[in-house]
Length: 547
Ligand SMILES: [Zn+2]
Image 1 (cartoon, rainbow, N blue to C red):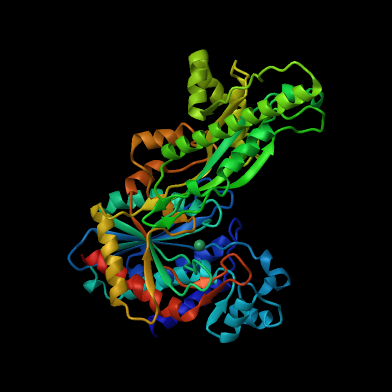
Image 2: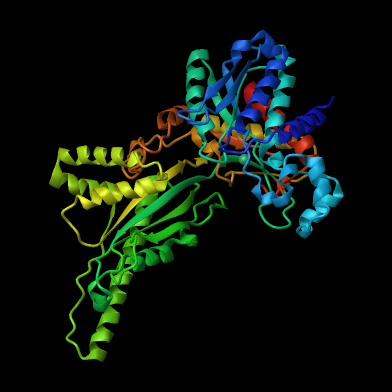
């Protein structure tokens, strides 16, 4: 049977297995993947090269599959890492069709009786698409890698180099699968003496704008930070309005400085990252009263292509400082008008704009408290870890809040810090030998594979993914800015930064084509996905390992 036909069959088989992120069902699809490998002759002969890798501290006891395959030509230690995720998002978006969400053929029948967006309706009627939860994101990608490996395994005499494939779960959640596999990759590298060249993922690819006919390959990936602000104002009774400094006003001003502002988009080689966008803004007052809030918090999703955490921090502090200054200026202006109109004596308000990073707050307090501060911070974290209702964002904010409370200085201030998660961007510039090799291998694949499609190679996979975790900045200055400003790191939030730095690999995503990932109209276009994308993957693997 042809490769494309086998990929289609396995795609359907894997799609049929419900594997919703954060549930026990994730194990069903992982077990199915394991079983498929187990049935291959190669793994019957080399059972030690197929294994499960447990998630770290996972209440659901989830695991990933790691399959190693060694070529016999030329005894090469060059190795390519392949990854694919086996989980999907939930199915509640299918409403009363939930039971068909993972049954593409039945679902297609049912969808004929539902009112669909015009584009989805057209695709459904064309017969050239398959609908279903996870079929596009990314059961097809996993099936592609597995079928290609099966082909390779049948002709290892003529295959140069090695492959390590990780089928990981929890990608749509907290990347529990990838974060433990990353550490395992380092162990495999040391044990086998492999030289890793790159990481290839086959996650989904879609239109970048309406009517976009291009098919994309991405060499590199976008990154993400979560800039967060803890805003300390000055409380007052509403009857003495100008005596207070409202943290809500400061928070609002910060939002206006950052939210969707193009100047914070990261532009590299003409590719523009998404602007920052607020994910939360609230004051921290719990009850109703006629006293204004004393503190507020807000955080943003912040995409990166090339700007590092230390550089982002500089931008954030500048923006917060401007926002603070504008609020104080405006308050002074308003108060002056109020006094004049009321015939009251007027004097300048006492507020001084003040913004500091969490690191700077720590340093200021350290001068005051010495060693005791570190002990106190440890105690605060320990205490907060007990509260299971706090997520990683709340935990971070509470650490900042409790630490700030210990400070003798009670004047208004904005403290800037990072909440989890952190996804490093991977910018494959082409100056490093491995980067160059990957770029050339992909270009060559694009030029070799014949198709009617316009295949375009770009630099940043635009969707946050597990690809980010195979690299981390190596510059100590950058890491210091991250670590000292991310209070949840190494307590509530674990990131294997050492392993990520050790791998330090360039990445590529060569995915199937489809539309509407994470929507009930999720669908996969068959021709490109089963016939063209796999050839591009195959060629890239060959080019990389034989160069
Ligand atoms: Zn995905």
